[in-house]
Amino acid sequence: DIQMTQSPSSLSASVGDRVTITCRASQSIGNYLNWYQQKPGKAPKLLIYAASNLQSGVPSRFSGSGSGTDFTLTISSLQPEDFATYCCQQSFSTPWTFGQGTKAEIK
Amino acid sequence: QVQLVQSGAEVKKPGASVKVSCKASGYTFTDFYIHWVRQAPGQGLEWMGWINPNSGSTNYAQKFKGRVTMTRDTSIRAAYMELSRLRSDDTAVYYCARSSIRGVRWFDPWGQGTLVSVSS
Image (tube, rainbow over all chains, first blue to last red; front, side):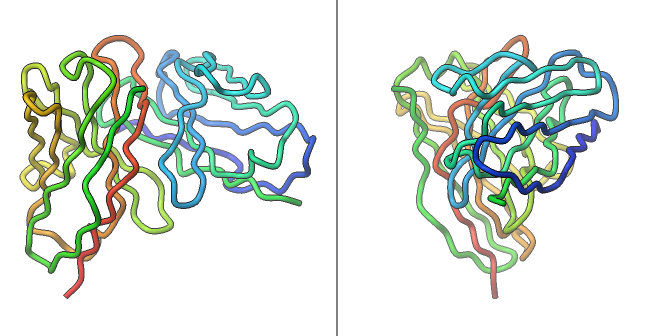
């Protein structure tokens, strides 16, 4: 199975900060990498697909980059509604696997 | 709009089975896979498998093989996930989610989730 490792596991940031979350795959997965946002008690929401493509309706302050084994999710200017948990997911091979999540909290 | 609506919360005893439904609307049901993903309390997301609603073919994660069965009813645009021989560590929110059949695939949208509680 492909292991997905996110860092950091949690972060504390202020509104307006630039935030970067990293996801590393245990083997090369090309661009088969997606990012989701999840708020408490809610289903995950797709933010970025195929490593760098912004899902329709998602604010442009979110961006994704990377290929192979190393990927990044960047929020250019953190907004109050962005305090949530973010996780990456690979769809290169089954079983599809997720990172453990990064919880973004208010400083 | 594209939407997946799941059945309500369930409480089960260890050893029992649970069947969760997922009803699709707003798109051609047979053109996309339906996946099942679960999340135990305070834990991360775990993929269980998918069903191709067109053919009925399935792909289960090894961890769940022998205990999970995914089916569909195309006449009512519904997918089902049945998990048998329930244990306490099966307590989780179970989500259905849609993905494309080819290429780089992602989950969108997701159902609202169904809480399955397993307790004696």
